[in-house]
Length: 559
Ligand code: NOJ
Image (tube, rainbow, N blue to C red; front, side, top):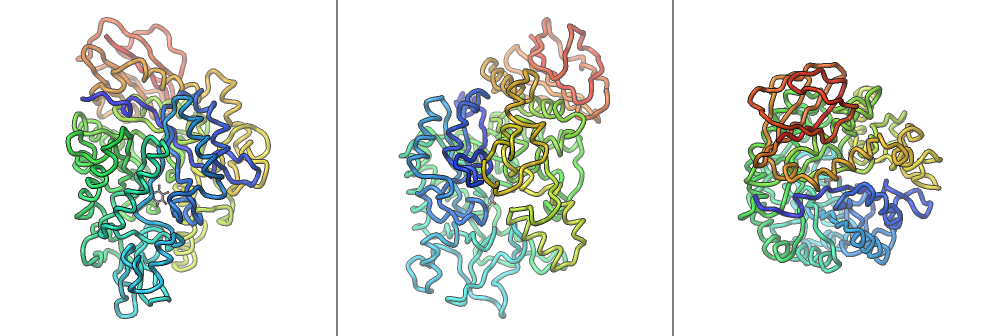
């Protein structure tokens, strides 16, 4: 396996709107990020993935871009962005920008032109079709509820939007569109960025003819994934982007692919003819979703988590490379879902961190995860900001007349605003995020959970992450070792080993509030053991068999 800096790195994701507000307008901004670079350096991360900061009308908080070469006015100026980048580079931190090119904003000049007339030179930058019998061109549902098509008065035709109606899909079939996108990427490379996260990149190629989706229920719109996920030309388009742009630079690239299976993961990331360095698959995130998607919710099972993680660990080994993540701006807080955000919040957050960071892949920390920030329960739908939440709420409550209490429970479990409440810096008003009115309310637990407290407490989750990052720099086995699941059928313990040459890491995690017995499999031999990290005090005990405390985790280095 080749050694690469992006395999040895730890990434920290900044969601700028919620990170730090420097000017008191209630919205996080670029200067606010610059102010916190020392904090990030203290944590020890190597790379920042910055969610979109481009000019945007903010229908989807920047994932709807109206100018790919300008900074969002609410966030600051290009000069401030350049200062931020310099500040990162001085501290040895690299920057990944978010590349959102499956769609633009409907306020991008390309779209404003495109909608003007059927023969406008930009018409073919987007996917326009006439209606069928007075209805949309096909029955596809949008990711954000309702139809994936919007009728446009100007020409009477419909445009495709897999996300919100203010996010029209770009037409990648058009070579001009692809070359515009290449130019945008070059623009940011010339400015000195170190890589890109490719948003929703597995939906850029749609099946010719845009066939109707199979009807599986009596909903008006149906899930058309089979006609736009991993479409026929997706790999070709990405290969072209790689050949024309990425491959000419030393970049880190990560593809967001919610539909990826192992084969797709290998095709995307293998070092011979892959097109990106690593991917975000969603299989572990989807363990809390039923067949109807994220709002069709179910509880996750440890056996499934083992199965999914182990499959990706084993089957990608030597063939591709993965990202390791449990949170981002689209997911609920991991300690609330996979840990215990009450009595064992600190213990379980550390356990989850250890369990994830010891696997093979590049770990990602989402802002606030290093503090053990939790999900939130706002009293009213009015307190929520996310377009996905509001569209779902309207469809369920207003159109389908589902009980609002049931719908709010779904939002509490999986709504994206769980991750988007302001970063909790200290115990002052609004968690030190802003001196103004925050664009979204802070989580009321900020007096207890905040960075200032964490930095004062040597036993905090923050310092646990810092230690995990330090360990990664010291022990190659953490980056390059082979994974093996042990105690496969244990219902509370998730344990595995990582092996490189004659060194073995033994990673033991208790996913429960019980005290299960750990029994070391007999084939794991060693002559000396060193405890690398734990979340409880551990004495010099025999590790052949011992009882774990609630949410306990330990990592031993065996030689
Ligand atoms: C994935 C992003 O992470 C999400 O926040 C966004 O809404 C969609 N793609 C559309 O850009």
